[in-house]
Structure formats: structure tokens, C-alpha cells
Length: 197
Ligand code: URA
Image 1 (cartoon, helix red, strand yellow):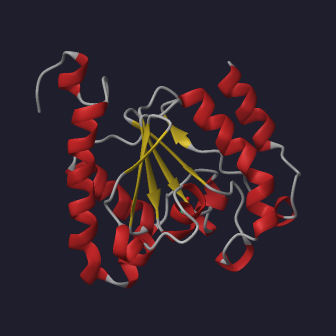
Image 2 (image 1 turned 60 degrees about the horizontal axis):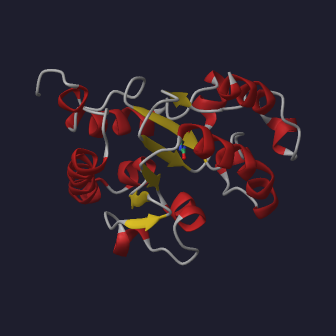
Image 3 (image 1 turned 180 degrees about the vertical axis):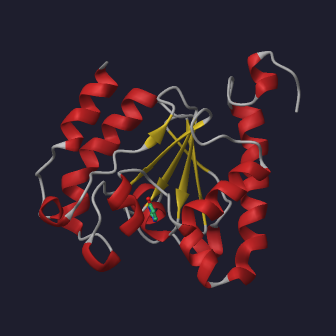
């Protein structure tokens, strides 16, 4: 219920100027009981139109990586962004925009209590792991903060621009699968007492 109330508040948010140009707020999608959260930068055009995260071409690529490690985006994870409204022309979010939006992400963390957070790309990694985080140098590395494991991988949109980097990202997802097996309790079927994959 608290989660739905948060979603309702977010969907009518007017805390920054992005509310003037958005079509839909993109609160996030997936399971509020997920042990793994994926955090992108902000909605693009398709996401703004549909009100859902990662539904454009980068979302299709993300789905391929998720499928490779047997994660279902509705059942097994929660996906959201640093800012919930589309920055015009896909520019980076401005500091005042992410400051205004951060309380929603903080509340999402508080209610979902993920064991693992995967930052998709530089903006999320620098905001959530370290301001000088280098995705190219440090992707796939793990940082523990207050019992939650944080990592970052290359943003799927960056992989569409530089397909030669796809194997680097694949390695990060394989490492994620191992981390899930180590620290999660109900993400994979065998952890829920179901059949092994
Ligand atoms: N890129 C992002 O960072 N987030 C989305 O939701 C879509 C594209």
C-alpha cells in the first residue's frame, strides 16, 4: 500500500520543470519484492510516451542480457531511473532535477530493500556509487554500502552505439548472476525451492 501511495505521489509530481514537458512520469516497473534493482538515467522518448522504463531499443537490449541470466523483468527485478521524467532532447538531467527526484528513489530503496543495485551507465553510477566513478574502468566491480551490493555496467544505449563493448557487459551480467546466487534468497527458482534451471 505504501508503495502504491508513493507511486501515486510520483505520478502527479511537480517538483521540477521536467513536469512541464513530460508526457508520462516513469515511476518504474517490476516487483516491489525484488532483491535486485536496476537504475538507469532517465526516460527517453519511448519511455515518456508509454510511462514505462527501458521500452525502446536500449530496453530490448537490456531484456536480452536479462534473459541470458534468466531474469524476468516483471517477476524478478525492479527497474527505475535516477529521474522519473524525460529530460528534453535526452540531455543529461540537471543537478536540481535529480535533487528534486532523489527522494522518490530513496523511498523506493526503503520500501523494496534490494540486496543488489545495478547502475546502468555513468549517470546512475556516479550518483549512487561515487561521483568520479568510471564505468569503462570499474564496470562489474562491487561496492557494499550498508549491506547492499552496488555495481555498474555499461548503459545499453552506449552498447548500441559501440557494439564492440557488448562482451564487457555480458561479463558483468554473468558476475551478477553469481552475486545473486550468493546473496539473494528468492530471485532464482532454486532459491525459492523450485526446480533448478
Ligand atoms: N535510458 C535510461 O536511462 N532509462 C530508460 O528508462 C530508458 C533509456
